[in-house]
Length: 313
Image (cartoon, rainbow, N blue to C red; front, side):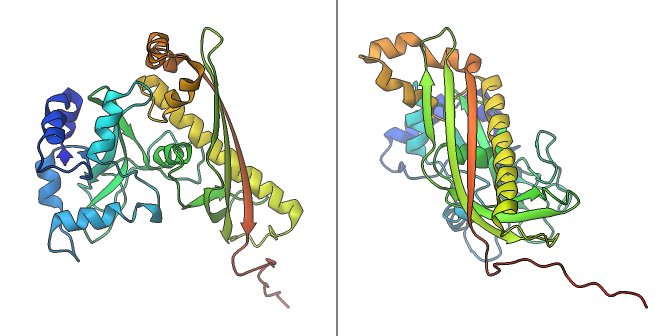
């Protein structure tokens, strides 16, 4: 199901209800929001390997874990999020590049070594000009904005839907260089919410683990001393991405990270929880985020050495 941005911002309540009721529409169908007009996106879609656009979408959705730059969402999950007071609806972001190859980098990325893009702004040269990227965020049944690819990855970490993804951080000891690697959730994030005060306090504890894939500077980060520096650099970068994403969703007043589910055990009845009005309090919540990274593997190298340089006679 592909929705245009104008329709999504106006509200999708009248569209989703019939889709859930009629037997020929399955709850496993993916829901996608185009950043722009649906007609333009369909006309621009030119699959190279699949004869049907629907098959291209199906294959794309089932390979999201290759980069984790978008979160698959089906009609059933979207409808459930519409009805619950513990989370907010979201959908897959979809767009096409008007100017292929000229991707626009969003301005809200904390780390200068990381590039993040909104739907329709991925730099591509050749091939299909359309792509899935980012997340469409709703407040009730209305679209309020799009999370970019980096914010989407931060959201997937909190939802424990982050199977793997590559990262790039500034080299701690050689800022002109970058260090690359692959990370994944080491465990489900630990989330605790204190509602005893006037404003809730949300404490988030994230554990990531992964491996190093590239050290262009040639510094021996396999040693315990240097590895600790690199792990801290990755942790600070991911922490900044998560905080940045949460600040944006608080501005929108929409809890897509599903924090509302963690306050349920604190109430005796559903009526008590409803009276607490979590969605109204979420924008004013204080959120503390702690991220720890453990780089358990170093690829096929156990000791990095500097590349030999020729000396002049």
